Image (spheres, helix red, strand yellow):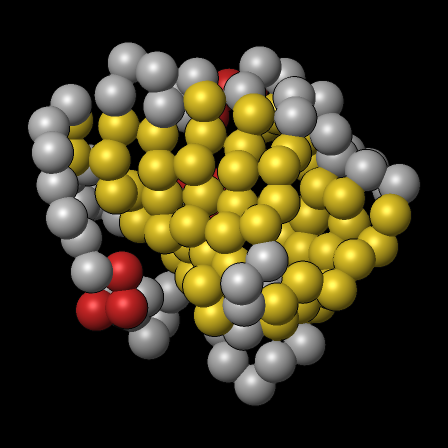
Length: 131
């Protein structure tokens, strides 16, 4: 199963105020390498809690900017032409057309990130990159 196809069937909050306690949101034990939990969506943006336990193939987004805040864990990732080590507390801004992916998890726990995308996420926007 492609990790890109996995979206949890939880309703995202649409255009209303909300408070979610992210540490209480836990991916199922049988989740694939990336567990994508929708948090909220408006006409202009989408947010997700991603729990990552393995590599994420290199890809880019044609139209949207992705902002990542690392909540837990650490990993080695590709961002454009660089390889970076990321860890809890790091913030990444990924403009449209920027190749990125997780090469490996480097902590003893899953990588958990808040992903905010603008404009609103559209799965046809993601383009896989062969290396």
